[in-house]
Length: 307
Image (cartoon, rainbow, N blue to C red; front, side):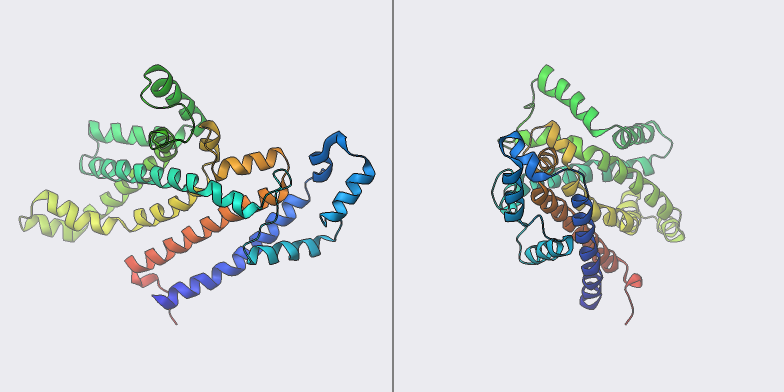
């Protein structure tokens, strides 16, 4: 297991290196001068030229890339053009809010998705099955910004059960976590249902039933355990996806998390802050996939790499 994990980690290193290059290249070929945008009409062309030289923006792009890479290796993502503060500190200040939101959304999707998938499989082609699958299809299909506005109108403005926006306590997390986790719950429910139906058709399930084992132990002890392999893998990947994909939810609910930082950096063309936020989110996705691979090999040792 340790050898397999080390191999997966070594494979992830060149992937991460390639992504740093793509992020740097794509963000630096975008038209426009960040110094001119930052100083607007307040400075002359001579001042802008001098500031560009002080910020090393006149250096060749390979030099700037190597400087960026060296900083990343030391945990230094540069200094924000707009806020004049270290990017690493800004990301670390925003990340806990995104972390709380993502794990709350993931917890909601697991609590709702797995039982819904199990009940749909057990009660296949019944009214509960159609209701649960309709709920999951709605969650997967409905755009997040639309469901967020709808829930804000109903549960915050009309019923006044929860706050509309902000991040000042646990009650502020409930609504955005439900919105962010709804689509994930739908995906987990549909995957649990299909995987469980496949397993329930196997001979050992029929044998257990023929021996007189009650239905609940058959489903929970035999079928569910063996059908959770693809579900658990998706759950591990989902956490990293939610961490990096909370941009819309954070913007709608006014949460100053990692996604909101990235959006603000795009608006102000703050390249160091945008590079840092995108690279940090990418790192989370890679770590999530690495965790999923290791978890998958633990659950099914047949897929481990042979020496």
